[in-house]
Length: 132
Image (cartoon, rainbow, N blue to C red; front, side, top):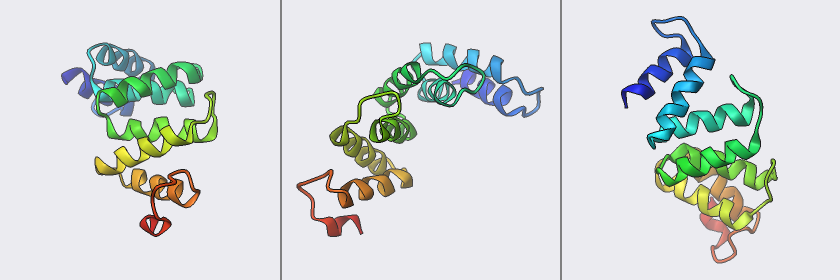
């Protein structure tokens, strides 16, 4: 867990000179140890091109590993590209499930996106009034 805190210090420049490339390398070391934040941050960086080139395939791999490590925000961040077909095939059933799980883990944006899935008819066995 200490490595994740060090990553954040470099990433945000708190108490030390900001160095997003160093932070990214440390996040990948934390990811190799299975830390949720260590998995989420390289996924985010690869998705948005922070400190590395955009690589949606790597981003999805890291997000899926973070989801397996129970990182709630990664549930949302994996669901968004799946819902929009960003570098991956759209999968509305998996998207709804990811958003539902994120909401159950306390992510307000998970609740919001899950409600949207219900309203869009992507969750056929649930009454639309549940979304409201």
